[in-house]
Image (cartoon, rainbow, N blue to C red; front, side):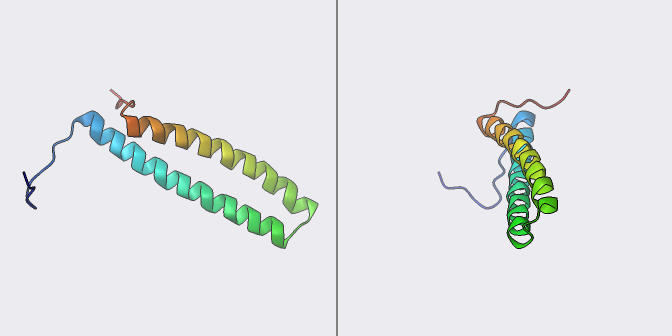
Length: 85
């Protein structure tokens, strides 16, 4: 059966919540990638100890956040996240 443009797709509250979480996680991961790119460019153009050490610390923090967001994204895509009550 072919869908018309005015057909609506009904989602449960959990499905809608998973879609929203997945959207937020994808945006956060794009932000993490941008942060890593900025840190790499900063270290390449200003290779001093005063830039490299804080950039390394910030890089570790960004990687930790990216791991958290990627796990959340995986859970959201598989539907294993439930909305708060």
